[in-house]
Amino acid sequence: ADNGTGSFPVHNFGNVYSGWIPMTVATATSDNSVFAQLGTDPRVGTAAIKRYAQLMGIRSPISTNPSMILGGLNHGVSALDMAHAYSTVADGGKLTFNPTLGDANYGAVGIDSISGISGCGDCKTTITNKATEQTHQVITPEVASEIDSLLHGPVDDSYGTGTAAAIPGVDVAGKTGTTSNYVDAWFVGWTPQITTAVWVGYPDSGKAMATDYYGKPVEGGTFPAVIWRNFTVSALAIMQAEAEHKQTSTITAPSSTYTGGTGGTGTSTTTSTTSDTVTTSTTPTTLTTPQTYGAGGGGSPSSGTANQTETLPQQNSTPPASSETPTTANNGGSGL
Image 1 (tube, rainbow, N blue to C red):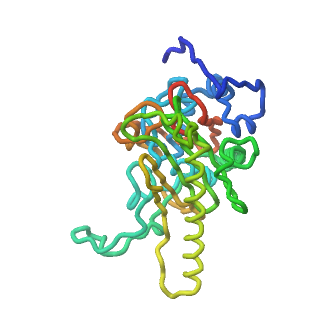
Image 2: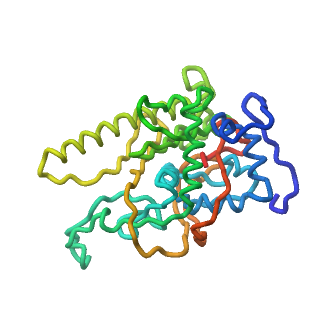
Image 3: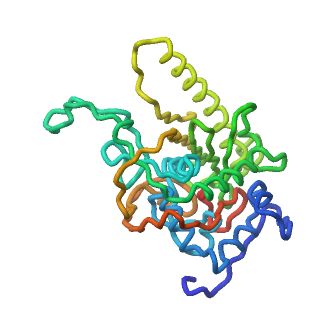
């Protein structure tokens, strides 16, 4: 309960417990018990986890019940916001947004340029994302680097939950996520060029996927990780081909933000390109966070609205470490 009473039962996948282990191992193996202990520590707490999730780009309402530590939110998180928030870490702790061409309330940018709109004043002049994009340092580069290091474990370590997302010769960091009863499965990760979020599930029914992976349960390390890998391999090839084309052609191609779908029922793939520039700009001091969220429990993405306001911390603030677990979180899991 909000007043701190009651119990918070936590179980690991298969009821296997490792005791005291390093955070690197806990992240790679998605150890629920370790992250539950960390999140309920008075030096961390759910309010701080909520605050930094919002600062990194999550715009949906975030509950502060203990199960949110494992991703058990009252409202789910959209795949778009998951990609955007993870790209904040990939960009060294900088939230990238565009007040002119981007989504509302510091959301992701989906428009490369716009021009020639009648009755829009200056819109007859082409406005490009590259010229109007803004960034804000919402977590320190040191903390972002630590998160990056931790999120290599699920992919790089032989015992990690996301090894199916590994791409030979490509630097990959990411995290798996699976809700209770195998209703939702996630993989969200990045390379130096692109950040992608993949969600797999039945959008309207909350149907369990206990046997949908060739007779086995659909977890974050199965279909989502495989889809993420296949999509990323293709996207990187396209980006490389575009770069080579620019070098040999006088035609200026627009910068690209890839949004892909894998096809098939209940699969959502959302990407956010990773910024490689720091844009100096005047940045607002508050984040107002209405936007899309899942109407169901746990981590199912859907739609709705809410209004919350968060004040940006000082740049030397250090957020608590946090991670969603891809096994069985009692109240679901959104992949936070």
